[in-house]
Amino acid sequence: MGPAPSSFSGGCISTSSFNASIYCNNKLVGAKFFYKGYESALDTEGHGTHTASTAAGSAVTGAGYFDYAKGQAVGMAPGARVAAYKICWKSGCYDSDILAAMDEAVADGVDVISLSVGASGYAPTFSRDSIAIGAFHAVSKGVVVSCSAGNSGPGEYTATNIAPWILTVGASTIDREFPADVVLGDGRVFGGVSLYAGEPLNSTQLLPVVYGGDCGSRLCIQGELDATKVAGKIVLCERGSNARVAKGAAVKQAGGAGMILANTEESGEELIADSHLVPATMVGQAFGDKIKHYVKTDASPTATILFRGTVIAGSPSAPRVAAFSSRGPNYRAPEILKPDVIAPGVNILAAWTGAASPTDLDIDPRRVEFNIISGTSMSCPHVSGLAALLNQAHPEWSPAAIKSALMTTAYNVDNAGETIKDLATGAESTPFVRGAGHVDPNSALDPGLVYDAGVDDYVAFLCTLGYPSSVISIFTKDSSIADCSKKFARSGDLNYPAFAAVFSSYKDSVTYHRVVRNVGSNASAVYDAKVHAPPGVDVTVSPSKLVFDDEHPSLAYEINLAVSGNPVIVDAKYSFGSITWSDGVHNVTSPIAVTWPSNGEAAAM
Image 1 (cartoon, rainbow, N blue to C red):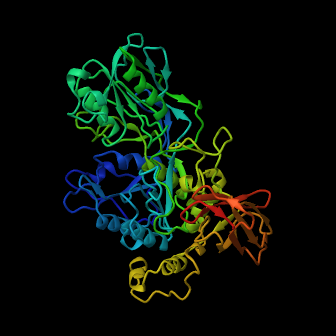
Image 2 (cartoon, rainbow, N blue to C red):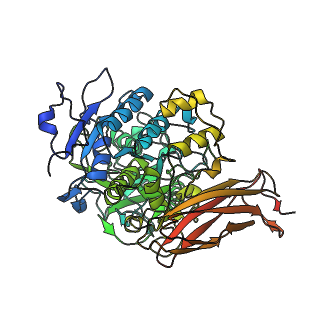
Image 3 (cartoon, one colour):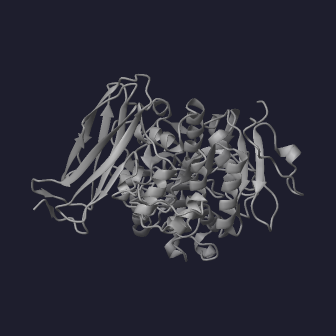
């Protein structure tokens, strides 16, 4: 790989703990830190290394985590160069550092910013959100900003990084599992997952099983388990509060022989494989409840754990949306659908720093070159890498056009041909859970049509939300008065590749305006609208046919969403549908989400 392009003006900063001449090269072309109290761009925790290699790691043969997931590892955009900007430290990630780093990256000339960081709790207002402000600065210079949606699911309104100029990514599973089964003394077998890499339990020798709640701590918190009740036994622990790997460490320190980690209702059937320090597996809520009942009712409950390594393309179906993946509706702008898309974020293999153990536990002495972890932090760089590929293939596309291509070509069915499931409920996911769907890289290269937007559109959006000119200047870096004369009739009029209507009554009707640009090879393409109306909603598209030509590469349309004129019982808070523009070659799909008035009652009286 040759030197960095002339458009990139950044570089690496050497310190006493980071020798730029050793760590930086034609692949890693930038390494800077943003925290005055600790000067080093070196990753001491692993998160940054994992995400950077996911986005743009070069191909490495013989990768794997111990004996798990062995093979060739490669990032989404292996030919891309990496510039690392370190903003997070043991004390946290500070707004001033985040904004300074984002502005520095833009000034250095990066093409994509991948940010696996987000606010805790509900998303802050855009004017108090350093990531939203920094992303606005970046997008105004043509830089794509891809961010994680957050790991606060499955509750509603939990998505962060929800500004419309940000590409917000939720987490999904892949078709690779690491099964580790629980075998009970009564012969029943319950499937789980694990990345335990130590000496396994004897598959033919069953050990006593106890419930953590009967031994001092159902959550298996360190220091709270009674060693006299745990020693030499397998402990059933419940998920929640402390880290999953910390539960196993607590069992180990109390003298336990193994651990079964069971989900509670909040996480449902979501299974996340962890590199425990004790023989351990995670099971879903249903299996966990059955195991707990066995432990509570059997006179002498026993069990063992069988570790089955790596299994690819088996059941269950994939992708599925992780229960932890944060969801909509959009807390700050309900008419902007979030998240935008989902991408692989569960049990993801990527590079790891030698400065930290795979569990990040102080008592873990192991050091690895690759690690398998989960989170929307892992899904975000998948999409960041895809954005880099799209930027290379279509350098004339704006960040909004790249986002549009990824959203309108996303798929919504799993490898079993069914709607992508939500692991929190086991039911079909909705656009508030999966966004526009799971990214489809090949289709995104040729989306047919794109919904574009720029700084003026985003200023109009902020005006529509009621932000004063003095606040909007924080985003635009322009002290002059923002022009709000062109604000939208409603915030949902932003030229976004999705629709999220909020009905105020059961006689409501909203109309949104959109403009699409033909980016396909056929300048004279003709697209017809195909509508899948949300239950209880009448959808009218005008015009319903778009005829492009050389003189009209961009065309406008309106979509009206109205409560159905026929009596319909709305038995949920939301209804979902979609609109697809098709020319017979391309299918340009946008989800439609409708939020009903507070109580789901009879509509269209």
